Length: 276
Image (cartoon, rainbow, N blue to C red; front, side, top):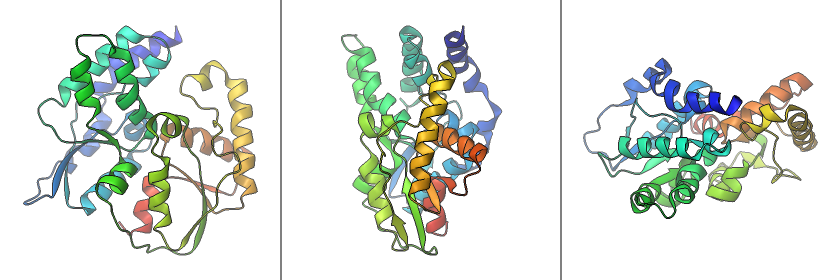
């Protein structure tokens, strides 16, 4: 029953949500942009962390990029895929491919989890199918924002913030599938007034796991408590993550536990340090 609800959310409700209208004014033309890119906000990036998505776009615009936002974009398909609805997920994949078929620009995501899904899991889903080469071409255009800034644009940042100690939470999919954590940390290390203190158990899951936190709430609660203990032991000002799902899970639990450490989305954090 729960998986069917997830599927309906992915393929029916999200494409029509009015909150995407917040991005409409961002489709502005540049006279001479250095590059054009598509921006895929993700579900949580539009519904919960829309400010982080807006800041992600600001980071791209800072580099004189024209950002194309398609209002008809929907979910990457990860909820239905993780719940075993492979045929339904294929419909989402083909929808996304068709949506971006009218240009060949890179597709930038503010999420390592969704990047892993769209760049890796799409390939597994269509392996041996007639559409595989088409899917492969699409996947080759997908980038997580931090790796695009770090590896493709090779940005150089000037920190405009006050001295601060932070720690970093690595999302499982970003770490093991998309493999983009090093790029995010490279950007952080450019910020001269920011001290990055690593977590002792950085590679351990926070307990979110999408539908896992709903199906196994007791186990999820124990996992996030252990994560917060690790965060608190670092004695930092801010806990930063580039994954909206993990951040939502961690920040909610921290609030319940009365933690004084501030949770912050990576692209909100980065934009604030650059004075955007």
